[in-house]
Amino acid sequence: MADPQYQTLNPQRGIIHVPWYWPHLTKEEATDILMEHEHGDFLVRDSTTPGEYTLVVRKKQRVRNIRIHQGPKGYGVVADNCDFGDVANLVEHLQNNTHVLQRLFPNIELLNPVCKPEKTDEETAYELLRELVDKNKDCELHNSSYTNHVRRRELTLKELQLCKTKITSLKVVTSLFEEQMGLQSTELSCTMMKPAAEAMSQEEESLALNRAAVHSRIQTVGIRLEQEESNLRQLEASANQQLEEMELLHPQLLEMQQELTLLRLRVEEREIDRDYLDLLLKQEKHTNLSHYNPEYWSVDCDSRGALQLMADRVPGTFLVRPSSQGGHALSMVCALGENGAEVRHCMIYHSRNRDAYGFHPEYCIFSTLKELVIKHRTVSLKHYNRSLDVCLTYPVNYKHRLSGSEMSEGDD
Image (cartoon, rainbow, N blue to C red):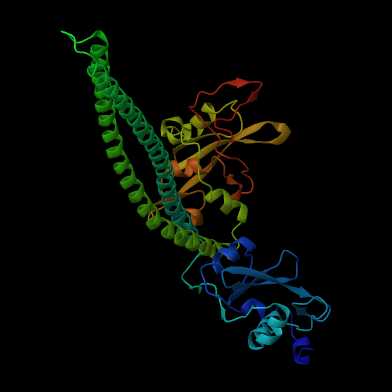
């Protein structure tokens, strides 16, 4: 039975303020974090069951998740013994009384808490978000480089195996030719031991010619064999070099992914929408889109000109134009439900200090206008303005065909 003092505590009071409590952390994210730590390191995350928690512990080479149940009197790691009114005190009790924990979960011990990165007063949600976007770009580039190395090595290994097969075949052919040449030499010797004639018999001449032809083939195969063996040495050297590069890149990639996971958690703590983050960090696969060419969407006109250009165009049609206030503005066609559509306008903000663009002063996180346009092909502007639930789907100057219903360029 727990100390009675625990039963009088507020269940939420202690857990919120302890540094090893990671709210909103998923099971996969917690596993990734602890796999970078040592045996006995632990943290607490929210359970998928509302009001309950999960104690996540590194156990040798594995990560163990222990459910913290909620009962009428409080919390506990056993459903019928939930007597601790505070999760923080429960964890502290298990940490100080290892025998209690190991009686329930053999070889589990709570040695060192894994704490969240400390927040600084200077950090704003914007700064963290910008850092997250930049780090995600670096991680994508690093991952792309590593993936290319893996693919090149796979091709090299296939070529290596093919080269070995060719060498084996050439050696077999050489062996057969040498065997054939030996038989011909024996036959020629037997023929020459017969009673001599004034001129070489027709049989002897044929054997000699065949022997010369086989000898020529052996030389030809020998040249091919030398070439393939030289190619084999080059392929082996390339494969070894590629492996060294992969072994260098892989731990760097894992470290970057770990940093990205931790940084995202810090951003989520600032109550930035998860769906928005997912879309923001999603890698764009359609690199042949018209969005990549500013000629399709950058137009030198004013708001009236934009209205004329986009009259009778479908929702999602857009252009970027000069703003009457300086800088740039976005004009787009928005759906109005059963009432059709209308052209709306919004300011494109530019942070001179950070040299970045966005549709909100606090979200200037895109390095160029093109990057801003490309990303919002799939990210709705509703994340900045609830009345603008539209994605930048169709550049105004892109000549797409209409056949009954609008066909989206590069649909997933």
